[in-house]
Length: 128
Image (cartoon, rainbow, N blue to C red; front, side):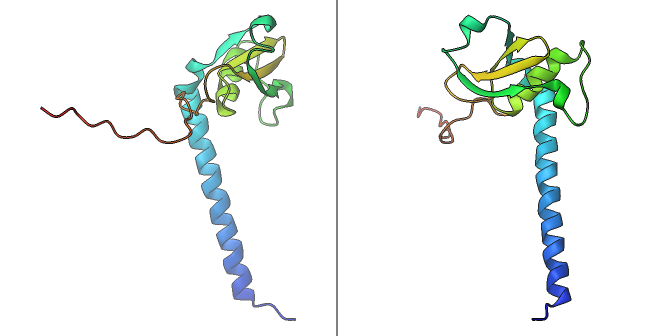
């Protein structure tokens, strides 16, 4: 069976465009997390206040980051940014590892706002 080279080229172009769009959205989310979302994440070392009370999301291991391993001074911001990107509002810090938890009513968006099940209805001013 012979394949049409034009169709293969179009398919490759569409896949490339989709991949670029995904990377652009990921970059936007990371910028929002760095600008405002990280300030909504609480760092704690008190395991009793988090474990068993909040929902565990994921472990954060900065030494396994393929792009950059943060220094000791950058570690707190790193935990906050990575935590808000995965929706956590609390990160339990234990040395060079962290555990992300959701302790609030719902996970966080990269900008620090709460994710809702549905969009909030528009607010209408009261009739006068």
